Amino acid sequence: MKVAIITGASQGLGLATAGALAGLGWAVAIDGRREDVLRRAAALLPAGQVAAIPGDVTDPGHRTRLAEAARRLGTVELLMNNASELGPSPMPSLASYPPGELAAVYAVNVLAPVALTQLVIGDLTATGGTVINISSDAAAEAYAGWGGYGPSKAALDHVSAILAAEHPELRVYAFDPGDMRTEMHQRAFPGEDISDRPEPAVAVPAIERLLRERPPSGRYRAADLLVGVPR
Ligand SMILES: NC(=O)c1ccc[n+]([C@@H]2O[C@H](COP(=O)([O-])OP(=O)(O)OC[C@H]3O[C@@H](n4cnc5c(N)ncnc54)[C@H](OP(=O)(O)O)[C@@H]3O)[C@@H](O)[C@H]2O)c1
Image (cartoon, rainbow, N blue to C red; front, side, top):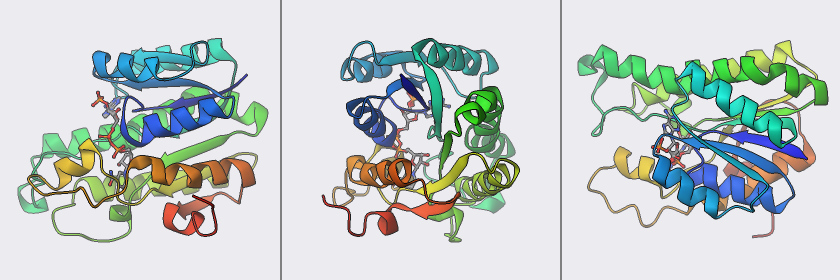
């Protein structure tokens, strides 16, 4: 069975993607730090097609357990680095950003995806697999107050581009899903009504399109990929 490792899949975009891929016959190895939330998410997915490993992507032991659980399910063909850290909420300006908090943002958003990629690169190259690194418009636009998260996603975009250059046999995508009504988005806009933002499921057909059509490695926006896709 084809296996996708999807980090941060106990809710939000990760869970929506895991559900969609399971429906397409993939097995999914998923994680998240809150064990109860992860267990509830796993219960929504088809038994026999899911391994739910609680833990933090910055923990090397956890990453190893996640990769091993994925291999027990079948052949690892997709790594989706989706788990992400916004930083403090409300988000501080760069001038007052606590260095320790900044390091924590980069640890989750840049260093952990690279380390997890290193763990499964052999699995992925064996099948000409896919890496999807979840990016953001904040990687490309300089929004005041986004000085931790935004540059970390820009670094993840560049990581994706270099991985693609080093591994032409893979597809490596930096993927901007657009605004989504999630816990992270609410933390970015504390106290604001975000009910006008779409549910994360809206972005999933764009991910399915990347996997189905396998366009060249690069940076893609859901808004562009969804043009012409039946909803
Ligand atoms: N929402 C938006 O508008 C938006 C826009 C652009 C890009 N994005 C990106 O889309 C992706 C998904 O975000 P989302 O909005 O769906 O967020 P979300 O609903 O808040 O979900 C985040 C998921 O990641 C897990 N997670 C967070 N830190 C983790 C860690 N250190 N180790 C393991 N799991 C961790 C969370 O579970 P625990 O907290 O229990 O660990 C949760 O399952 C992220 O990469 C985000 O940057 C979101």
